[in-house]
Length: 411
Ligand code: ASP
Ligand code: MG
Image (cartoon, rainbow, N blue to C red):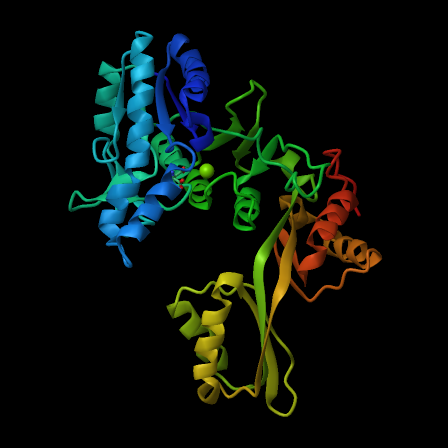
């Protein structure tokens, strides 16, 4: 049997009218004789509403009960959608996380999928033509309901596709696909036709919020091709898949930014073994994600250490480091919360030089000062003053001619 996996996000299932449009998307592969797994999110806004209720009821909601509560959003959209299908004469049923079952660990609120019972799903597919599966939820070894973290329905869908060996996982959303950059920042942003997993991971982790990062990791691990596309049009969207030669000939695929950044500098840190560990281990223990790190060459046995953290964690970071001033042995701590990261991303950078310098030159031409730089094989990130974020994004988009989809020229 041929199985098609489709996932629809919250805006696509938010009311009856939208669900009717979703039904048209589902009926197509069904009428072509495929079995269809439809993974649904909660109606738009519902998960937030439920989380707010938990906070209203309790200062410190029990994590297992909170998951039990927020998972109901998906139960509602799945039951309603299954009713619509049945009314059309389709053999369909809703399937909740514990019924599939989608087995997870017990990290409530951000559980990881450990196993999906594909045999049981196959059996259900013998009996039904469409299974409407609740995204975002699973159950742990103790049969308690878990959730997979915000945006987790994407991961549910990719996991279903992997478990059932489907050719593609279609993720339907309210935008036409993945763009070269945020269209709200740069009107010339263009839909990308194909993007490599690694590029998508970088785009997603830099704040391009179309897909949950974990779903991309999952897709890469199990080699599931993901097609991100719009519920409200028939246009093809963006294919997220394995890297191929055509992708490598493109130098830069996209520009990402992250305004949620803060920079910390520790001045005159002792330059001895163990100092970095003394600074960063206490931060890691508190799950503070440190990103760019620069250590200056030392002078008279002292050095400066600069790094970035998410803006929301800056107070916690400062508090932690101030307590450790004596142990770490720094003289001053400076912080700046008015910074943002702008990155150029592309697998083509692996084989081409000069991409970074072209980016630096175009920022310089606009008089944008670069505060810090970090690079990976497929990414160059610049930390800049956040008031220039939009200008930097547009400048880089223009410099690499992303509006044309033609960036194959060597810089
Ligand atoms: N409903 C969940 C959320 O809002 C999961 C999802 O939509 O993917 O995060
Ligand atoms: Mg989403």
